[in-house]
View (cartoon, rainbow, N blue to C red):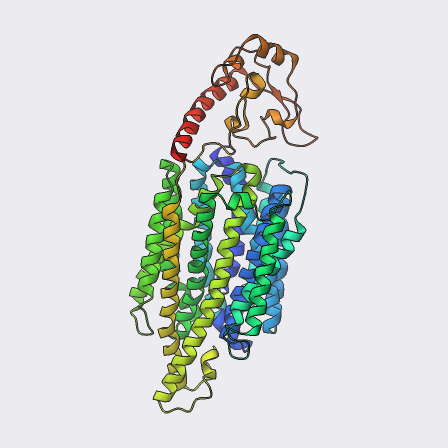
Length: 603
């Protein structure tokens, strides 16, 4: 596909991704207002974020496997429809439980959009060129992340109210749905469906139970970290995940492909993605809360104050994507991103409720730059190691662990933040001679109704406690740095799929990799067209050279005929001319050199 054709194909896809990300960021600056209106606590604040991330994480591998089995376009459209339903329900919510239910529905849809966007890009673009388009995707994500808080803040401060932070995404989703129908045209790569329903259930149950445990452990009114309830929940989660491993090792189409995620590059990239997910979701989630609660900013002002982090993310994502495409090297940008991430988070760990906001902006710009350098390039590294038929599962595996890390990070760090705020608030009230009631004020985000002296103490407690969130995240980011240092860089292939060994004869000369198509796709002998008699006789009369192309070079212009993978209503066999064969010969020569480089790199 040409650059123009790829951009046309990605228009609707990126529009859908933009809408999904906007829905998650637009609510960030509205959450303090929502919690105040619905009488929510710090725990509820964390769970509004965690519920969507949990559903996202639990369903991403399922969507990824569906992408390998079914029509990706229909799946993307279905995820957008689900997203619209969740957004409408969230906008109508009158209680925290109903809002959480709506967020779960939104999370299911976001899991589909995340997994399918990566899978579709991996299906139509070769890894060597993918950095450029991954950069575009990163740019869309950064713009949505930047525009979300700004738009959300404006809506909350306007007469529309916070409910329209959910409603506004509905028309955007419908526009994306129409664009997908018009612009996204994919080759028919469906296979016989073998859905691992048992693995899906075990995965969802095991992950959900674990994340529910970390969300409520140690909180007043629930259970302690070391208690019978904790033992039952952790033990149950371990058993469910152990059964998942057993099931996945035996089924034909596993939800979590163990052979793929156990490969060195994929395994290290997954661990690094967990660290990135915690930094991405946890730090950015509590940054808006810091600006509004600790610094007294309005929702609109909080959106403007998060722009440095978004600018860093945008610069890192697009810049790295262009450089990867130009030079074909990707590890250096991941390592640099990890270093920037650690430095920025470490510096942000020094802030309090009086820190100069310009310094806070510089710190957040630095770790935003690190996120931009790492996010898409970790997925690219994994996609470069798998065949097209597994691209959905591989991409979804990285996204799954990133989302799971983010969900766990938001829950655990939210619990830590709540405890720190409660302790600091109690200390502040006692120092001011104000009677305390067990620190209850520390768990509430409804500061509007508090007397001014108490509200000031609570704001200071939030500002001083937020630094610990960034410090803990910085330590976790160090683990990510260690992982990416041990990733072995392999050359990015210039073809969408791996090149199979080319047998002698004309039919075997035109490989899927050489033509840039998928196995069984247009231009591939595997599509079902048998070799003609002329092909057979030519192959017998003239042996192939080392590249398997020499016999094709001297054949008749119409000796190679294949069936395009466009269904029963296609135009019929495709005849490849002499010029096409000459081009394939040149590409095979280049591919042979690249495969040699790849083999050398693996040694």
